[in-house]
Length: 144
Image 1 (tube, rainbow, N blue to C red):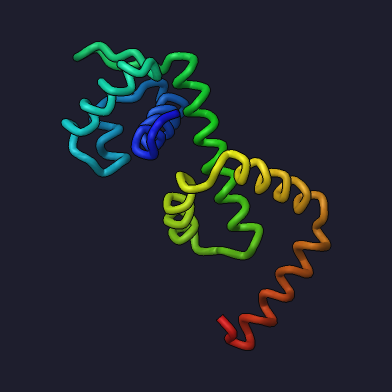
Image 2 (cartoon, rainbow, N blue to C red):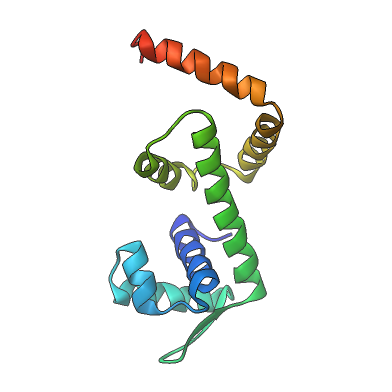
């Protein structure tokens, strides 16, 4: 299983390839706010662990293993963003920061449980409305 740092790279590489059709070292460095030399080192490690194939000066491609993990990581990120919005978090910057902070610390079992809850909440709009009413009432009382 990849480390949290490897997950960040795989998630970003997968996203870049989906958006642009490719992922360059400079694009990855910019997206993750790290030095290109750090990206190169990580790419070499991901290549060694068979998540991608990297040829110096030619670029990289995800292996089926890397693509599968990358998609799973992007889906996890999206799910957690959706969950936070459902429970009333509206600040997109805060949602992004919170997801970045928690996504690597949740087990896949917990992610699956959150996914089931989100699926349920999508079907039970009345529950979400009641929850949001309660949240507003509590916010009005300034309990938090």
